Length: 198
Image (cartoon, rainbow, N blue to C red; front, side, top):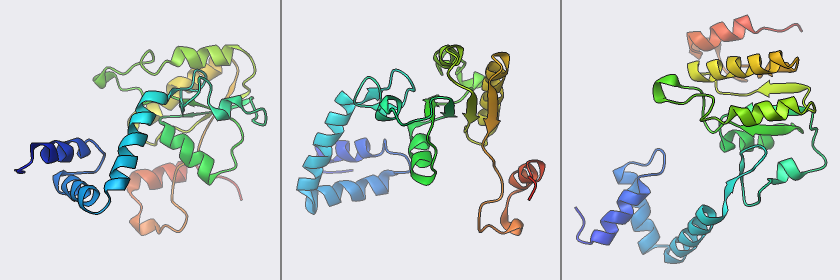
């Protein structure tokens, strides 16, 4: 395809990014090489540094350069609230969009028996250990509104219930500014079932 084997390998490497196909990867490669070689060097250096230095927080499993992430290390967080999410991107979204001041537990996925992902793969024993410490009074389940996310939330809520810890689920439903005629039936059904008093 390419006269340069290395260029072909670069394009193929860029395809590992989500949503990037062969044409998009080719555009990125040409842009970096033709128009922004300094940016390409900086990107490669930062990518190598990130891969070598970033790991999982020993408490919440979020991505961190330190053994304990800044959120878990903060003395200003409410340690009685723990929000359970599927990915580090979910933590970033909640931090950016809300005033949540508690802690997190990042599952790094969801329960999916067909894919061989059970409680052990999500390291739910670590979450159980946190719950057993007695500092957590509410577990906020913020898994995705998918079949697997709902099953995961239910499984974890049972863990909390067994320890008499309040388990809550974030609301799902019609988006702000959305029109009912364009909302899918599953979302609309969920919104109707989860309606609240005004």
